[in-house]
Image (cartoon, rainbow, N blue to C red; front, side, top):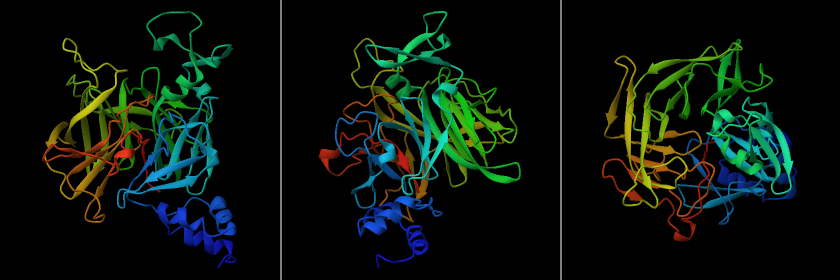
Length: 394
């Protein structure tokens, strides 16, 4: 068995799930080598895998391995990925992880094949003016003062770990038809205004800002062949002109509800959904209960709305039917529970989404949209404070 042709081993791996791949690479050294050199698989493991650290107190960066939590069997599977060392995951979609290093490197990494695509560095964003070195924190970034209240002509300094953990708040990857061929597109939400930047490897040399998006974008998704983004007030824009050097956004719905709450966009049963996360401060005071941007929170409930494109308004959704929704700082997803009996119907699986910080207890669980009850995500209490770092579909 260990002498099977490499092409045949690749075909076998292309039909395996993550849990099967972890067993495949343990058979013998030749199979482990085949696993390490395999191209990205063509199939999709439709059920999201939740990415978890394998120990407490790991912070925002990873060691040379990842843990993948299976919702179906409740087990955590480990993949040894040296390329993840000292990197933060800022997004996961279509089989790819978007990772950031404090040295400014940004990459796409496929965890199963370990294929890497280099993206433009953090230094290519217009708000990053340069770097400096200090005795206290070593590498520092000089950030444009448009992103802060105080003013200094040369910009202000931030430590490299802070920039790594907070500059890109979300990233998604999709395949889009550009110039007569299907091309990879990476879309990110980035400081200082939390607006959209894209990178198309086949045509860009640096991050390109999408014009007319507005600010305070909290989520972006790929729906019906286009990228859609929503801000904290519920305004939705669609990205147009992606096959040209100057992409721009057009308003789909202007809905200044002033709720200033985290929202997620996802497709379910053909509809574009906005899932609003209702939170409160983790340690509220009697006199002040407004949630500040950098204040730890806990989730109370969710409100689900679907977009009526003709009437240009949001309609509340009371039931998800046989679907469940997976939410987090990575790409959100909806699945049919009839295809995955281990998943709970009418539920929202949500992960820790406190960008840039890891706190305990971690804000993650399973919310039943019909009853309003919240269940634990982990059956094992010892894993309850391991923060989920997003979702992965291979």
